[in-house]
Length: 206
Image 1 (spheres, rainbow, N blue to C red):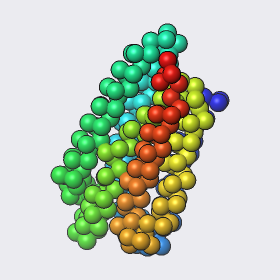
Image 2 (tube, one colour; image 1 turned 90 degrees about the vertical axis):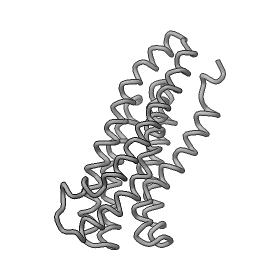
Image 3 (cartoon, rainbow, N blue to C red; image 1 turned 45 degrees about the horizontal axis):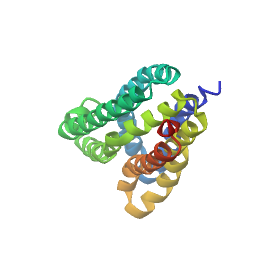
Image 4 (cartoon, helix red, strand yellow; image 1 turned 60 degrees about the vertical axis):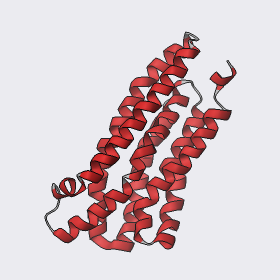
């Protein structure tokens, strides 16, 4: 239960973030905004599940090599994973920005609704570039049995920072602040992930 708690929070936080987003969007943009966010949710689920699937596949390999004390292999796996996840993030971001109209048109027919959703998706897609790093880092600390740090990272990106930014950014940036919330949240979480990897990674002491 202890080891799986961070993964449990990751799933629960998705529901919390969707609920908070919908409340703010309904207030700021009405039903059309909620509809746009629903479509973004479908796209985001496909992308994040790809990265979560990769992360879950790597976790047993990390744990096995930790038990075998193959620390050099673990560092190699981390580097390869970051390279792959960074490549996936750039790929998905580029794909969405090139084909944003076509993607949105699958769900909508009204040109005004398409324009709103396309605009929102392009802003939101910045988050896809870096979200994989945070997903992997949380999974990495779970794999090496440092669940507290994994839980902190999960809470930061899924609940704490997200709620702070979804409330404050629209007041500063207008409606664009809504769609940039996830990107700013991922950026701040990435900074925290870097600090944890640098200062609390037990493998650096090996």
